[in-house]
Image (tube, rainbow over all chains, first blue to last red; front, side, top):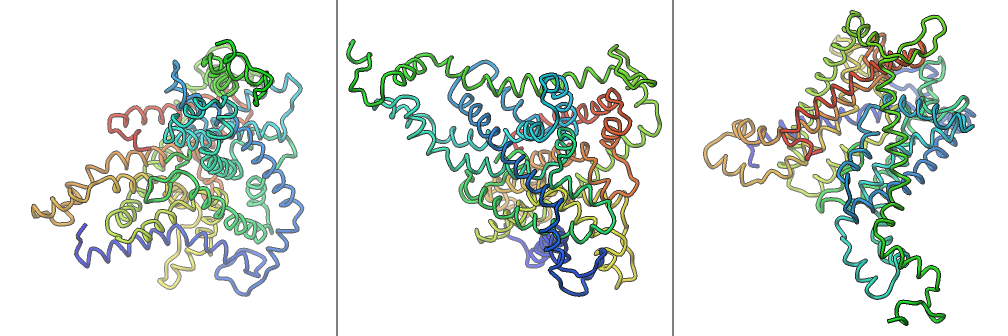
Length: 278
Length: 303
């Protein structure tokens, strides 16, 4: 659009201000993780690596990190299995209620986490506890998987719709059975969408706190929970800050990769929303 | 005929797997059932079932003495939530916060998205802006919460920035909560608005300019009306996410309470699941009502 020079400048300055609003707080966290002060203070006075070192060797941080990775890995695996199954069913078959399925898949993430959390909590209490499965890491994995299915589903479904089924039909015409067709034709064509969905599912699970707090058993503490619990404890500020800065750096790379690997609308990169749709 | 349909010893893919393959190929319903049984058991039976139980539980009550559930239908929970002034105030405050967050995000998102979609000519810069907005979505909720706390806390970054002007920041409280939630959900507003602007043909803007409209007139008369579905799509996120949030207000809100805190406290501390379930129905009703109201604008296709 043709704008006057002045309008251009104003728009540019406003845009830069909005981007600053997004990034200044994050930069502050990273910068302050090197601040040698023992309590929160700004601006930083002198440089230290003490807090990064303390965070790296902190027992609570380590065990929470391990718990988070286990939970996210488990949830991602289940989400991949279920998400792929649903996306194949929706894209390759016609059946009653097909349109409703997408809605049901999105619901666990569209509703507030506290509602999904309470619902899952009572479901586990009525279904799993009588079976002898008590609340623990396993229930966290089940809870996370429930809302992670949607990102795998959306990514794989978009790819399946785009590629169509003609290649598969060709493979079968040439004598390949369903299993061979899947292994040699279908799977390679959805692989990168699957990886993108899996990375997003992992990130989603890794960041979750609300559903975790309703599905975790005693003694199970994920990294977000560790941060939240320590936010209100005295003298933990600098370590939290270092953990937050580390997470910030650790999150950026996989998400960037996921955005590059999933289906973008051509010119612009894929812009996943909360449910990973584009 | 017989030789082509029965697997022979020379068949490279082997006998049993061939016959399974053939069976599956001829029975698409079996394939479909195999694909859908496990996911539907999970999502429909486990998840939707437990949501339904939660809605039913909203009509139960607890024995105030033993704390045990009394599974007899009653409207007491809703009466409590409607008649108690504290709850009413929290509900109104939460709706107010949701509206304020939505408006702030719209005001911030439109210029940035417009800059990226219509003003910047270089594809690379456009790409960079979209990535820059998208990345923080995944930076971690608590990391961003902590970041906002360092901004608003007493003697924090905002106080430091305002000090040269002799001013002081708002500190932790209601304003910090509104701004922090607006900060958290901003990408959800920028992305649909950007997508909406991308779809808007440049020729429309040129036509408007050719007919003598100033940039401001074009914006008000052409761009904004066409952007309504995208704005509404973004507002679904900002609105729904705000209604369900209880953590950010604990981090930056001081003593401020939001609606979801009522839900959380009644599940945890007070151990009154029926009241919590009844309280949980408020955001569900507002969100579903909002979705139904905006369906006409075509916003749901813009999500």
